[in-house]
Image (cartoon, rainbow over all chains, first blue to last red; front, top):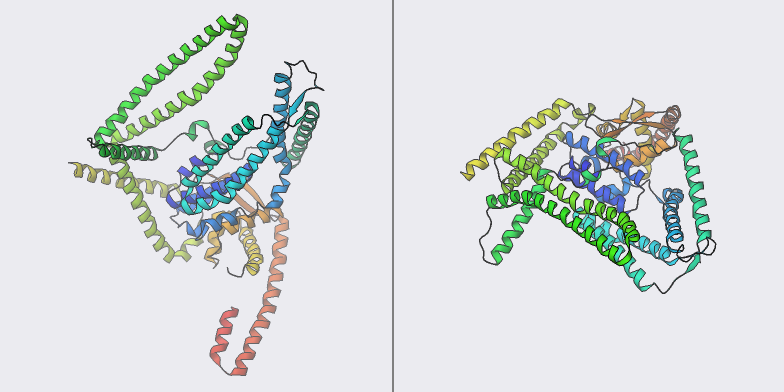
Length: 421
Length: 128
């Protein structure tokens, strides 16, 4: 899986916006992951090249992002979807097989039923499919227009709401439809799904061997753009600082409302700095709390159910809870702590507070856009000459750009400091 | 780029013509075509076209790291692609010659009939 966030980070302003919209367009259109990866990698290279050559994004995509997305995904039509139907069915069948197996092993083993007598409920599968398709339809009909009219952030929010509603619908379905069951024997289901899985996997392996010469899935995009759980939570210092700036504005608004003394940027920075130390303390406290809860759980169970049962459940449940705790609390708090640390390293070097840092970055971004516009205008005049020789951007050019950015960066800091004095 | 039906076929040949000059990639194809007057050609049109050409076996694709970092697709023309391009060129010549004949002669005819030079010039401009 590709890390689209890491890729988007390398693009600026309108380039990033186009990239994000094209990616989300693929999601709401339910485009297969491998097709989306191919399209996005290609678009990323194109936008990055256009950006490095200071070409306007319209040069690549035209005036309408919507039209561009429609054209760009044009090859992924209904014929392509029909071709991919076996793969789609395989994904569903895989889950049904696992659930049926669990049903057979965990639930029916208590009733001492043989594999031929055990029964399972069909309704959750039908309900799940209906909810899934309905969500896809909602995403396609409503989220797509929102994305082009109101922006990617709002469309993403709507997508999360749809996902949330999906979960709520599943929970409500299991609660209210528990009396209406469509029971069927487990073994035909297991047999059919199992057979389908075998046929599909064997067929796919043969096809891969014939087409590519290897059976395993070939990863085309390795390295820095591969999705990693760690990177998915990473924000650049500027983005993180912008989030903190929003918090600063929000807090001061509330303080003003209650007619209390508002926070100065320096005071706010000190508070955030203190949060790093506090988070370390909270982490230790949470580990302690988790151990206490686990011991209390085991002890109370031993008293009520005996040693063997309690130890068995403790051996299963405590590691699971531990993993959940590790990812939900420990990892997340570590990400936020590391982001704060990285930000403070940068702003301490510059001798600025968080708000000044955001302003400085914003100014440098604005001047970047202006510079690009000017370059575009001048390039458009000399377009004919320039287009003949377009064999990629040299590293010298890139280094030159970085040098200019650094100079501008220092000058902005200096003017900021003078203003503060 | 308004006459899409006409453009579709021509573009396919032109893209193949650009790739026939040597191994190239998306942005370069766009630039080459833009510098030759196809300014309105966009990536949204080009990418599906390249995929179609690849599927038909007229071009082959190699993936390699670009100087800027991301994986880039480099396209090369295949033997059947070269054959197709030659056929396309011949057909294109025939069609344009015939179309020129019909359109140009028609204009001449009106020009002579009306004896108005301006009308004739407009016609020529439309044909070119």
